[in-house]
Image (cartoon, rainbow, N blue to C red; front, side):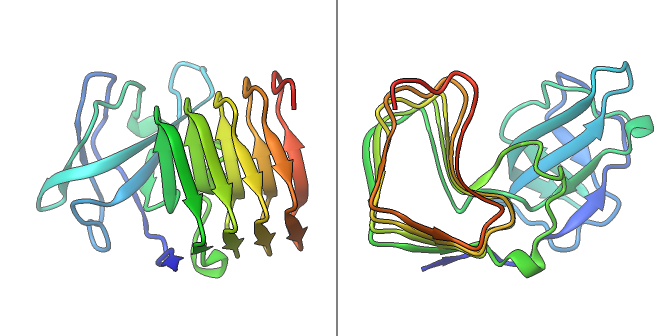
Length: 202
């Protein structure tokens, strides 16, 4: 079983720009190298809200290095924050993968959804992947979505138990083609199955 520990949130205290790969935190307690983190800030130039997902790869005091540059503005006037929000299983740019016979517990009561659901994260998340099967999995108590796949093709979700989540149990994200969803049992979540714009040939 994979279990999500309680999330930790803190403010970012130094302006960050597109090219930066380091951030400074108000309180580094609860953050460590290897953590998946989400950064959220209002864009100072009216673009809206900037949301990115990164991994912490080095630290010195309250300063942390990210696996990739920010690629967005995280200026102090936008109230930038960082939290240990991440998918327990995440696949990006993979093909011919099977995820099966596993339980994933999102620990909803002790995880703050920093971006209030704008990022469409899930306990299981697939991005730009092909021919991924999720089978006989239990996904429960998730603080965002249960299983979500975006711009991913020929995804099959079958015979899964998905329950007691804050938002969408199964979420076929934008641009995903030829999804197959069958034999699943969903209950006690915000919605059961949700198809985004551009999810075709299901």
